[in-house]
Length: 142
Image (cartoon, rainbow, N blue to C red; front, side):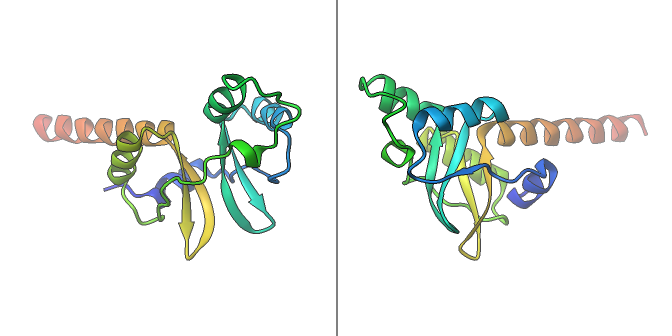
């Protein structure tokens, strides 16, 4: 069974971080440049939360706030489940589907080591299914 550490190693991608006092408009600009949908909010080495495009649409636009006046700490998600590198992708899928979330922080010994997205989980699931199909084809043809 594939675990979170395998996905993080395959991604070889460090989370992009911002300070809590970063304006939402600046955060959106960073997401656009990096072509990502979330940023990790950190105060020094301390994880505070994740800010996403969904947070922006629901907590800024729909509430009539201004992107250049609102800080990410005002809209970030702080109640996301934490997962470990040893957790399975199936476990991630259950949490994400059950709680309708798209991003989860990964912690190892209390330290943030990465972010897993629903896209990562779906890609990994598809890859595992392809490998299973290939193995079955090989078995049948042997």
